Image (tube, rainbow, N blue to C red; front, side, top):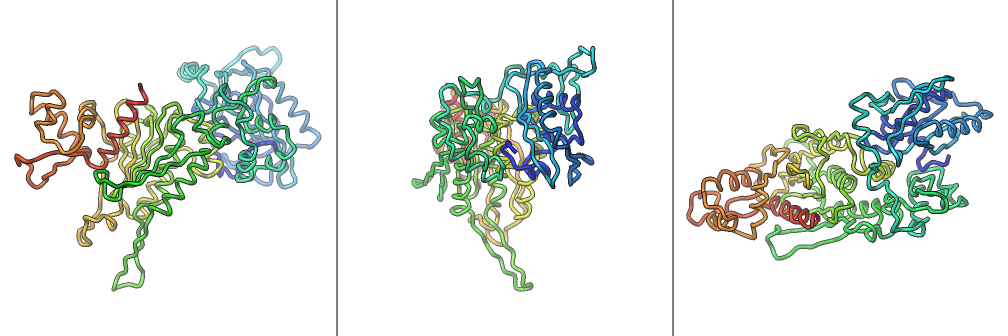
Length: 518
């Protein structure tokens, strides 16, 4: 099968969400045409989807062994699928892969998100029918777009996600066949065996990592991100910086390690470093029972999910790396920009991150096939399960009103907190979302160390002390970005204020965001 994914993964939906799968028991050209149109429109930027012909379904689940298609009809059906593509406006063609499952022949159509959306298709293939309509996916169903959906679909016209665009500053020579074959082998694709003798351009088209006419083929950005040794050559700051502050960011010593390379390799190397150098286990024995309690300073699966999401959802047009800061009492993972605006603040407070728009549909597709990130909307629940299982405090998500950055903070497990005594270990709770106001941003921007209230007012050119206290100082302290140097003596004339470790991480992110805008 000439597809960059294993058929068993499709039939079990291990790496592809059900929203991106459609099963057809037999050949129904009109139904196939409408679903092709819906996947081409890629309304939610999920990367299109797969149509599997010859497999019955029961409530969205395939019934195996498949019904199959007569072998004598396979060529004829494939020709008719090509003809259907010309019936769409503009015309569109999926990648077709015939394969055999349990001795039965089926056809798999890989209908990727189109480059020239929106697409429309004939409402009916009946003779004399001339009506056209736009089709989209709603959950696991193909539906005709209504007025509001049509309006939103029109707004997507000619807007192709950055990772799915052609890169005219590169060439085919920038795509590494060895990296491509290593990937195909890792995802157990049948295309791995065929790639030995396959024409390179055809292989890249099957992977959907190139575009353009045969006489002028250009790599897509996603191809360069995964199948070039140095993607940072094309997308500056495509890297993960891991900075370790063993004594806190205010100390003189710290270590920094930078990971570069193909996205999945860079991510795997960074995660391996965190697992081996950061993750620790503590065993607590009890005199009244033989079973010991085991805790990790941080639940690694939760850190893994957060870092994968940062690589998945960051913008590769902003020249800022993904940064991991290892602090004495927390780990922060920061990236630019913040969550999509379709994710409401109240949803974030309830740990619901179900977006209607995905920034990098193809990056997500490759990472899911590598099983490096969860399916749509399931990553945060997995993260929370692992945190609860380990008995760790809940994470804190930081962003601002303009969604210019996103910072995830994982507090250390209470048993590993140096300042906490064994008898003081209690349940720890944190606020989910912190709003970063313009005033707080200004305050963080001028902080360089320990400052008195008067010094801060002068730095901000503010004369009214009460206004400064209510609008600047208290919001920053309540959000956990600043703290008193003398917390036991809040009214002391020697009182000063300084940034917390979270505040320092946020300060650096905001400074990076400012540089990115210039």
